[in-house]
Length: 229
Ligand SMILES: [Zn+2]
Image (cartoon, rainbow, N blue to C red):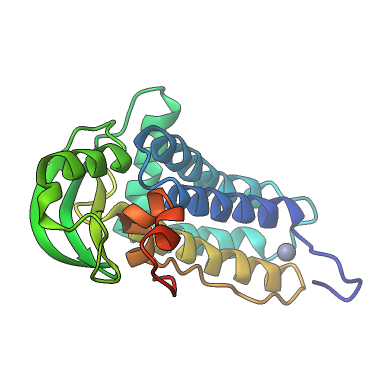
């Protein structure tokens, strides 16, 4: 905010919030592939638009061009940001990113994987479908009443998008968003306003695991468990 209590770069700031929103949606839909991928595409585009909008903010101070040139040079040196720019070009040209998913599925204690196997997942298979298959194929591993509290079937999923990197993609999204967040923070100061930087942190264990009680919370009561994990 500046001394009038206004944000000097409202469009840029709003676009940063939009990217943050879609990152949250990716986490929320981590286990439903088509929704996950729609939101990932939206995130990638919103992230890119932050810098486009920043460059065309009205009332740019005189020092802006030199500052931005320097920042652009810095950003070009960051491999991860370059990859996001390339990924955005693929998304905008209406083709698809090479996304794939692997999972560990089996018995979990709390949100920790206890026993089971690691496998590839068909691209559009939701985790709920994987859970059903576990219940049907290896249901005998657990007694019907689930007498060990918080021992249940579950899936721990990993999304990887080749164009962005060879590790879990939401963490990479979070890193890229935080890097651009720092730029937007600096831009606020350049435009004469302070801003509180907010780092985005995702609870990845919570995001990546999908348990029977996530699929159907009424099971917590049915099995007589208490305290959420
Ligand atoms: Zn602002």
